[in-house]
Image (cartoon, rainbow, N blue to C red; front, side, top):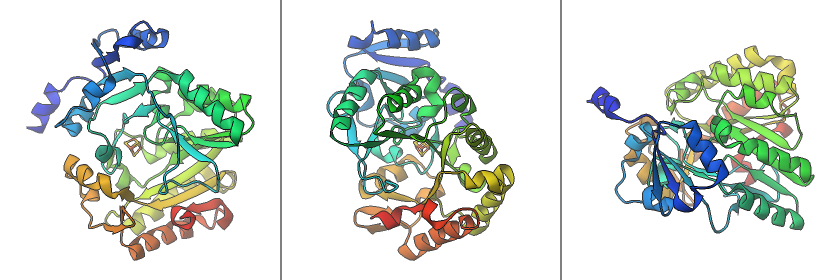
Length: 342
Ligand code: SF4
């Protein structure tokens, strides 16, 4: 039945929905040229497709359509309390894309969005204008890839380059680009900067099997190594840590691979490290569990202040273990734990 479903599914991006007012837009046309065989469907508003009731998000994810849209209203938001702020007071994130080309079984987006399709917002200028207004008031630390995976689609939209250029124009702007990709080409195409932080999420292979479509640990580490050698600012994120069977061994083996692939000297040049065990807003867990039968989301989480997470002693033990694995290579001042900021 599964293979039958697979054979019947359309290729990702074989259908592209375009908001009518964007049809003549230059960047929209450039994207459509890249998918010459795609069926292009004009729509009034992205929500007409994305927010329909009773969508099958898992099936849609396996056959993702692309929706090109214009985002209105507020475009840059203060960070949520479960996001690591790394000591930055003016911590913001923005959403240039809704959903992700990867399909991590534990991803909160599965619980947050009513659709598995991917929306790409085309009005970059509006985002930059709102950012510049904010920069007039105070410095800004902006996460540009929190609710998605921008690096995986950089060839399509060029947004990482666009925001990196903004850091050159505004010395009070720092951006963080969170990724699970092996983005060596992207790293080679950008100059190293202390205000463009590439934050690689690393997981043991035992967890990566739940991070569908993502590169292996080895491939991510190749990009990290290249990034460090090119002088990029690199953050390593062990967040979310997932409680898989024999998780201690899995995370220890991962750390051995990291040390072997990067070497102690490169690890000294990693900007900082972040650690956090899995947590999710109480509003999203139910929908997340409905979207997948994956064991990683069926754990009997406990609700602490509106966020489901592992029981505090389990979470503490997991995060302490990861901290202990890092300490031989990184001073405590370079290790951030999300629990310590709240
Ligand atoms: S890479 Fe990040 S945003 Fe994409 S599915 Fe995985 S957890 Fe979600």
